[in-house]
Image 1 (spheres, rainbow, N blue to C red):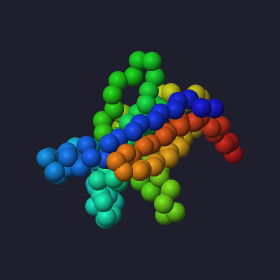
Image 2: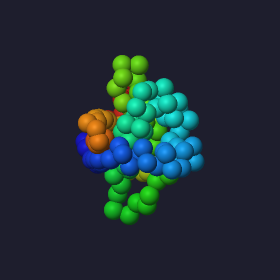
Image 3: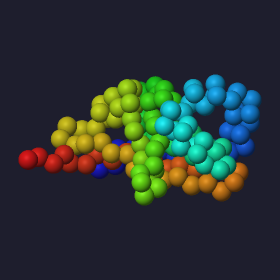
Length: 135
């Protein structure tokens, strides 16, 4: 059962300007250590940062309910599986929000798609509740 859907688009040039202006202060505020290491290992790091920015926004929208407040940037981490497929790790407030919005007997999952075509990066997130398997 789908609980929420979120999407976001980000101008890569805006992320480039923020990195130029604020440097590590910007990156440390928004991105986890693992996200920074991944992006910095890539040529054209700003597009990877922009995709993660859009993904964090999309995930927050997918998790949002009628009375939810904002999430910490650090509570949503975007990682890649060995296959390259993007995945989401949720911490603290984001994890609590997912758990509170997931019905009993179900497990919350986030599905994520990322794309970019300079100067834009886009993310799409689906929050789904799947039946918890019992032994």
